[in-house]
Length: 333
Ligand SMILES: Nc1ncnc2c1ncn2[C@@H]1O[C@H](COP(=O)(O)OP(=O)(O)OP(=O)(O)O)[C@@H](O)[C@H]1O
Ligand SMILES: [Mg+2]
Image 1: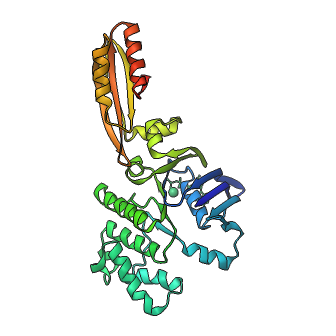
Image 2 (image 1 turned 60 degrees about the vertical axis):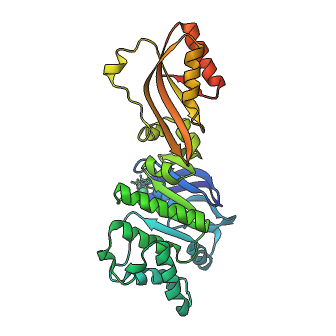
């Protein structure tokens, strides 16, 4: 388990103070793939760098499995850091070393016995699907392959936590997906907790189970990814969700709408359309679909429909009430 307790990070520069992280408390459970989302400057990297104390928090505690890293001596911290792997947007591979040597470098830093290094390098290369690239240089690799080397290197010393700072931001969508799948596989097979920074909600939707949204150094909302996608509370969260699930209805269509426009949400079941057709049969209302989608988040469906309901006010209200009784979340738009 990884816990941030009242973490504040203030940068001092030329008589000016910049607040990077502002009193953040957050618990990340073992085995989570935890997404941290926010615009540029929100404090995501500052917070993440506090995990392995690449950045020392100005105040607050960072607990890894109950041990406060800020209280460790430098030699204890060096050992603790080996259990925290990290990957970056720009990979940071050593260009004069081959892929295999890049990975071996991390093993040597952890004083792995010489006779075990080669076998471990091969194991890691197999894990990330780069067995045939051991002797080539980073310059000969694609971005996705470079990130795979980054992942192999980060996993070299069997970390319990993997930190990813915009690890897919330099990659095209297809390559991004393959890296995300690899991260998920690592999380499932090795039980490694992953903390992942991104500004793309698609990334969160693809692999994270829990998330936090940051703004001005603070966490404005946190919870299960599914719940946040279903019912985002804060305006900033709603804005981020809109980037993936958006329901802009053209004015051309809106101007012909006579009835009430409602948004209907079905959580965790695809029975939504059955409920809607039952409603239309039971009550004297006419429904027109304006928009609709079923999103799959963590393989759980989330149905969202925008409809126009026409009819007497009383009938429309009864219809909405009935849908709510059947488990839908109904909202007038
Ligand atoms: N080393 C530093 N010295 C001074 N200020 C810094 C330093 N690092 C970050 N900051 C400031 O702290 C705030 C948070 O920055 P941070 O890099 O954590 O944001 P971020 O959410 O990771 O942004 P991005 O999405 O652009 O990577 C910003 O105002 C930034 O300018
Ligand atoms: Mg950053």
